[in-house]
Length: 357
Image (cartoon, rainbow, N blue to C red; front, side):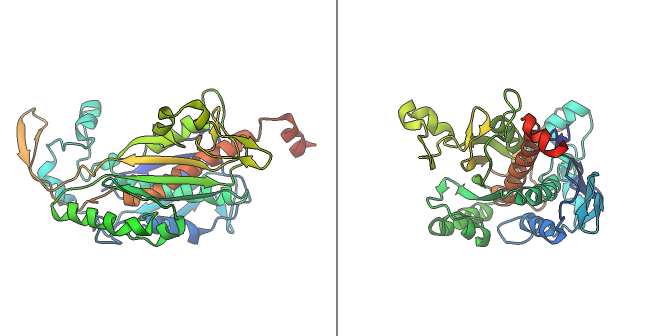
C-alpha cells in the first residue's frame, strides 16, 4: 500500500534513484491558504547534505505543485506535488546489485516481487520520506487553522538522552537535540560512529499542542493505534511509544492515571489519548530508530544465487537516520491528526446541522 488516511489521504510515488519522487494529497478542504514557502521550508529541514553529520548527497528538494491550488488556495481537488532527483550516484551501487545488504529491504523485496531497484534501495529508501514531509506540510497548514501545532526533536542518540525538552532549541541544533546540555555528547556520538565507518540509533519526541477533544475513531481507527501505525511506517523506525509507553506498564494504576480537574489534567501519562480518542491534552509520541544499516565495514551476506559472500558498501549515508527523521515524524503526526479532524466532523448530528441548516 502506498496511501495513508481515510478522509485526509495522501499517496506517495517514486524511487531514490528514479527521475522524481512526489505525492498526491486528497481531501484537503477548499479555500485553505497554501503557503508554498512554508512547504519548502519543511523540506529544507529534511533535505540531505546540510551537515557533516548527515549524508552528503546534495539535493535541493525543490517542490513543485502541479494541481489542486489556484491563486494560492486549495481548490478541493487533489494536490499533486513533485520533487525531482538531482544528485543520484547510481554507480555507487553497481557492486551490490546482486547482493542482499544486511539490515535493508533488499532480501524481502527480492523474495516478494522477484525484482528490485538496487540503486539506493529504490522505493524502500528513506528518500521517499521527502514526499511525506511535503504532504505533512499541507496537513500542518490545515491544522494551523484550528490552532493545532506539531513539534519534534531528538530525545536520544546512542543512549545519550535529552533530559530537558526545548523544541525551540531543537530547531537550531545541528542534531535537532531537545537539550542544549546533551547536544555536544550527542554530536560526538555521531562523529565517532562516522569516523569508525559505523552508525548509531536514536529516538524522536513528537508532540501536538492544542489538539481538540474527540479526535479518533473507536474501535478500529483509534488515534493512538493509527498514529503508532503511521509512525512505525517511517523507514528505520523500530518502536513507537504513546505517552509514557513502556514506563506505564511498570507503574500502578493509581500513579499512572491522570487526575482530572476543572482546569484540565494533572499529568499526561496517557499522551493525550484515552480510549483511542484525544482528550484535549498534548498528544505525545516517541519514535525509536535503528542504526542506519548502511555501514562501511565488511559484512557477510548472500547474493541472488544463494551464495555466501563478503562485501564492502560504497555510497553516501546518514550515520544517524533519526536526525533527519524528526521532521518526518512531525509530518506523520500532522497527517494523522488532519485525517482525524476531518473524520470527527461527522461525529454529531449538530455538526451537520451547523453546515446545512
